[in-house]
Image (cartoon, rainbow, N blue to C red; front, side):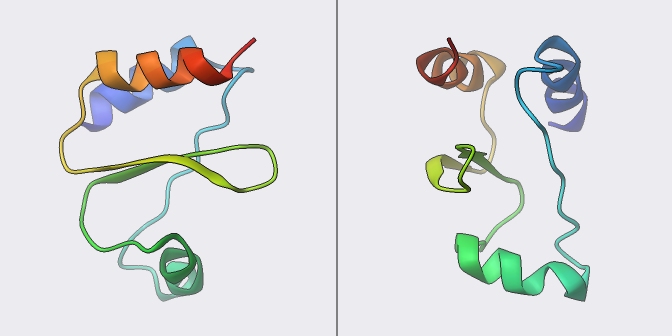
Length: 74
C-alpha cells in the first residue's frame, strides 16, 4: 500500500498532512495506544484537532480513501 499512499500524499500535498508512524518504534507506542492501533496496515483520517474521523484496518483501496477525503475537504 505504500506506493499508493505516497501517491495520494503527493496528490493532496498542502491539503492533507500525511504522518507515518513506525509501529516498531517504542517512542510511538503511547500514540498507538491512544489510536487503538492493533494491526498493520492501519490508516487514520484525523481532523485538525486530532479527532479520528475514519479508521481503516488492512488493505484499503485508493478510491475508498479518496471518497472519504472528499467528504472532509472544501
